[in-house]
Image (tube, rainbow, N blue to C red; front, top):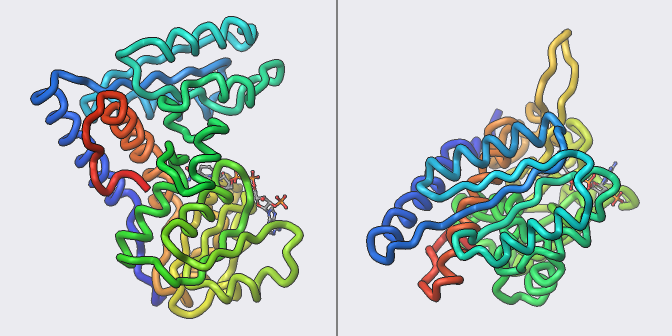
Length: 296
Ligand code: NDP
């Protein structure tokens, strides 16, 4: 292996520490405590794990955590009424509705009912538009975490060739916007891209957000490139359940200059950025200066 490992677990701990220090100052100097409300509808086991982990880390950072667990058959009207209350609650600076929602609920309608200033997931159409036009917005947590790691590793990204594999609204597209915002030359690849390996081999920065276990092998990687693996896939191997990324780690690490592992790469950064976004939203709501280095 030649690649340096970008340690997302350690970096996320550092980000959480910076958030906690800023939260402590807000309390001491202004008597303000940032608050995050997480809404979970139904009992999806993976979502329950995410929500409890978000709540735990919110409290550890010194913020208030408000968990709202609703029955799977909750009506849209009741969910919208809860969001309306949270929008108006001055103790709540961030609102996150855990996705996916049960099928009878319209996710777009629900997400777009969140006050954009409290939309810490950055999925509200206003925030998508603000990011797309290079204005101050709430930025989706996973791509924000990737950007922070890239800036930390490289310093300035201007002029680098970046290829993002995946064009989803939650990862691929916002990731591409953020890299463009940092003056990379950006290509977005997807399932209809011709000769994907050759396209990827043009990348100084290769971001894999495909949802296909270990699809990106060393053959897709330019020697010395930085590889960010967003994928989280559970597979069965040797009779055990294993977590792997969208990148085949061993072959890619033999060629890359730097690479994020799975687990311990992008994953931990996502919740750290959720906390950072809640802090940013709280500072903006109170007309205070934003923490530096924790936003796009
Ligand atoms: P989506 O399924 O929404 O999008 C996948 C994208 O990959 C699509 O744009 C699709 O193209 C493209 N794609 C699929 N197959 C191929 C292929 N053979 N060649 C090229 N492109 C392909 O996934 P998400 O963006 O939601 O998630 C991507 C991965 O990131 C998943 O593994 C997910 O678990 C993980 N993830 C991790 C997070 C974290 O915190 N670390 C957070 C969110 C997601 P097309 O549009 O043409 O269909």
